Length: 181
Image (cartoon, rainbow, N blue to C red; front, side, top):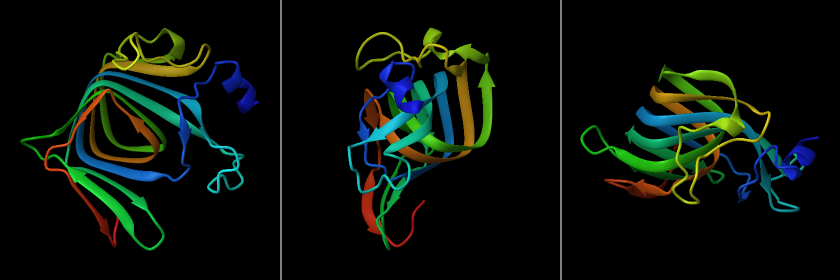
């Protein structure tokens, strides 16, 4: 059923994911223009990471028009070690435009301004798609929510994909580490 929905355009298929989840944390996220809906991410055919998923992962898409993140940490487990990226602090946060994150877990202390819950995701109008023009939307008939702003303290995500029209990472540090975020 999920394959059929993706093929019909009800659920979007943006690019092939590796199938390796990565953790993202931030002490604070602020976003102007927010949309959220479900979709399916697909791996390449015969991906070694497919496991018993058939190469598909159901994800929560969180899209933010303009985002700022304080003390961003991103890590991916590489079997015994992690590739870890850190950036941003209270004076110089990470900034992103048209940020889209595909997650199977989003946690933190959230506050939304002017939120619409249960809206058809194909009618969203709060997040600009600066890469392709228009607005970032979900499929027709897909449950979603959108808000004027979103603030999340103690953000923690288990992600499969991130895209952005612009992503600025002040004080970037990337290194292999014994621990993740």
